[in-house]
Length: 333
Image (cartoon, rainbow, N blue to C red; front, top):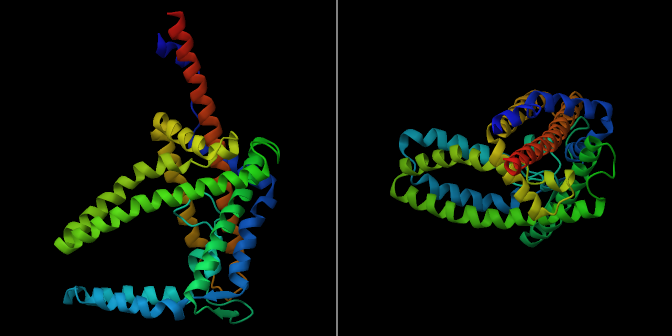
């Protein structure tokens, strides 16, 4: 009888329908891409805050110590990794901390922060070398929260467009406050999680490098089961006007009952984002054609964000209706 009652419900929201609806929202309001596009332009054409002079000696020291434990057969691959790390550090722009750090749920996505363009159509960019560790810490303490605040504004704009108005869901000040609170909660959670994991993997590496690699592979596979429930942690803030803690609970509760579909949505969004980033990053940074790549990245990431809000709204509504049908049937039987 319960199954018969639930058969009168409409089908749960699908991945394709949510993605299509997200595309329509952004196509009708192209101004939504201005924040991610503007951040990319700043990181591409603006000054670079370079920290390689400060950190390169320490990185070289760590790499030299790690090299002692590398087998002769793996030495060439180790040198390639070493060269890649030093090159990345050389091109790293501290201003990229304004963009969405991948371990945090709220922020503005940036293609420049991923590709670290080394040149511009105007020639070599202005490079400001930072050689003080305390200045770096001070800048990090400013840039990372600014990135969270910008992410809160960006998320609210997109969510407001999905819900039918700029003021829908949550006020601007509250959106910023809850974004900061959620990000700080994540920061604490990462410290509590990654410090013991790093320590454990380090001990395994001392015992057996192969065992440590296997444990790392298992953790990467299991991480998907954690990423899906946490993917929607900010959505309750911007769609339902919830506080940060209730939003986390709502995400866990929703994905508990919709994990296959929610997992498919998260996987589809990840593959679309990463796959198209390969296309957007194809033009060289010293060509104006790179602007097309930055605009394409801003558009697609905004589409995926809008689609996630639509999926969250529709799935929570569908589950609410399903709960209500089951409750009514239980009371009548």
